[in-house]
Image (cartoon, rainbow, N blue to C red; front, side):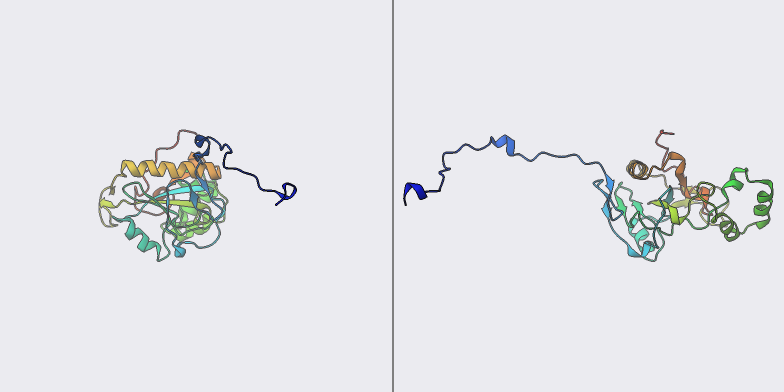
Length: 235
């Protein structure tokens, strides 16, 4: 081969970059809601249960706190597979499971109470109308659901639910006298619930006032959503 046609380059003696420059750098990425409606980068376990998703969600504009009324997360998943449950489940050790997309509504609230009636600030004629319903949750719900949030409490159609594995331990039945008593949430559950709420508040501009205890907005056992979150202190 002549010198004119010789094209190869000897590289054996070339100098490479310092090995320290080749080490992979760690990049910190905050939790976020992915295009599929599942929270990413938060350590949550994605356990999709198709039966939970009932159609598209508006917003969401609010968060509703629940207890499972059962002793295990697997029991809660069994109920979820029948179509009743919600987006997040928090086990006793703090493990967070996401079972439904945040783009989809789930059946977790039931029939809502009248917000203005509970607050005592309905117009006089509306107050009389609702009082005339008596014990008729469906009539109250039908009256309320045509309103826009926040004039009413949140509905399945525009809210995210968080279920905490915890059961009622005393005065749980309709015939029992006395205030129902629930298992307190564990420290790990309290931390995980606060983490979920922080992520959702950031993603959807949900305020502290938009986080609700289930039994205060719907016809559920007293205290079911109590003692799970103390607020972020931002409002």
